[in-house]
Amino acid sequence: MRYYRCSNGSFYSDEEIWERLEAGVWEVCCWDEATGEEWMASGEGRLLHLAPVDAGDVPAERSIGQIEG
Image (cartoon, rainbow, N blue to C red):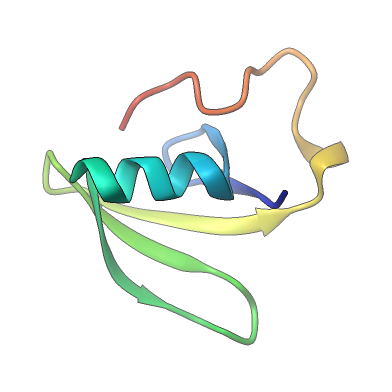
């Protein structure tokens, strides 16, 4: 499983990202295949940047994907 740090301050797994895409919460804007970075439009019209991180980089005090957005 891969993890991403989002510009909204949350961390998401690739599975959680797909769930948001399938539910229509997020929409893909663009991505960079070389770096793995992705940009999503949220339902509130915000542009979100997702950057891949190692699972060990996810802070222990943060729950993966708990913050909506």
